[in-house]
Length: 435
Image (cartoon, rainbow, N blue to C red; front, side):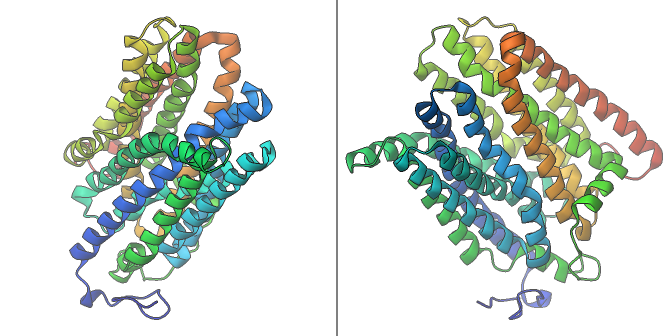
C-alpha cells in the first residue's frame, strides 16, 4: 500500500510534501498506542509463564528458566529486528516483531492446552520477540525528534508501558477466568489475550506508522546520502566500543537492567519467606513498575534540560540505594522491599532514558539503527543472565548478599560516568555536560 510521501517501493519520500513536525506527531501517537497494546501482551505472558511452568514440572528452577525465555527471546531478536528496520524501515521491523510475538503467545496457549513444558518455552521465546519490538519503539520515536527534545520523546514511549503493564496486570487474571468458564485450562486465556494484543500492536503499526519515520528522516538528508547502510553486528559493536560516550550509554542500560532484574526476581521469594501473602507481593510489584515507568516524562524532560551525564549519576545512585535498602530488609519487613524496588525501578528509568538518548546522540543517522540493535541485545541479554544467575546465587549468598552485589553495580555506573565525562570533555568529541 502506497502512502503519502512514499514511492511504490516504500523507500524514498518526497520530503517537501509532508511536514516533519506533523509526521513526528503522528509517529509518536502511533507508537504510544502500539507500545500500550504490546505492553498488555508482554505482561499477560510474563505473569503466568513461571506459574504454568511450575505447575507442569514441579521445579522452581525450570519455572525460572521458562520465565527467562521471555528475555532470551527479546535479546536474540534485537539485532535481527534492527537489520530489518535498517533495510526496510521501522514499520517492517516492528510489524514483524509483533507478529512473531503474537505467534509465540499462541504457541504458549497451545502448550497450556497440551500441558507441554518444551512447547511452553518455545512459545515464551516467541513472545519475547514482541518484547524486543516494544523496546525498539523508543528508538523509532527518536528518528525525527529534535535534538533538544529527544530524551523527552523517548520517555513518552517508555511511559506508555505504564498503561500496558497496568492493564495487563488487571485483565490477565480476568482473561484466564473467562478461558476457564468456556472450558479452557487455567492460564490459557492469558496467553490468548497476549496473542491478540500483540496482533493489535502489529495492526496499529502497519496502518498508522505512515510515513515510516526512519525512511522519512533519511529522505530529509539525516541519513547521509539517503542510502540504506548495511547493519552489521560486529561493525556496530566495534563502533560502540570505539566511542566512550556510546560505551557509557550501553553500560548504563546494562547496569540498570541487571540491577532491576536481579532484585525484582528475588524479592517475591524473600517476601514469601517472611510469610507475606500474594496480594502484598503484588502491591510490591506494582510499586516497582510505577518506579520504572510512571515518572518517565519528567525524567526525559530533565535529561533534555540538564544533559545525560547528570541523569546517569542519579541512575547509579538510585540503583545503589534501592538495592542496599532491600538488602538490609529482613524477610518480614515491608518498607525496605517496597521502597527498595521502587527506587531501583526509578534508577532503571533514569538509566534507560538517559542511556538511550546518549546512544542516539553518539552516532549519525546512518549508523544508529545497528548500534541500537546491539545496545538492546547487550541490555536484554545481560538482564536475562541476571535473572537466571540470581536464582543460583540466592542459594549461596541469600537475598542480602545478592543485593549487596547489585548495589555495587550502581557504584560502578557512577564511577564510569565520571570517568567517561572526563575523557569526552578532554577529547572534545561530544557536547558539554549541560548541553
